Length: 153
Image (cartoon, rainbow, N blue to C red):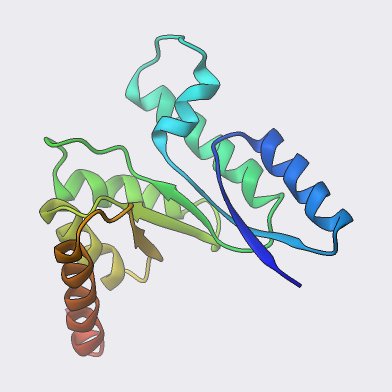
């Protein structure tokens, strides 16, 4: 049996693909989404970042109820977003369910947030990686976290 992970922000797509997978003895196991995909549900409506964040949490919870595996939800971040802001968002996102994985940008501020969230036992992953340098950076960061995880902070 093959297990799939869908990248979408539309719960209806998850329902349809989950049904199709079951018909073929397969499983739509997990999900990943991001603010851009979630924004498609707004259909051009102007909303505040807080309203968009609330919509994201609602959609992520709908997806959690469709797929049995992990559901990644990305923080809202741009070039001015601080690690502290990402940590605050990440904690809020993670509160929704124990299968929610907080997705962070692969940037310096994202790495700072990654450290803080991992120390708080929040499941995390990184956004798409475009370069070998980013791959090495994530690898080294994870090794550092694993090496120091038994220390008290």
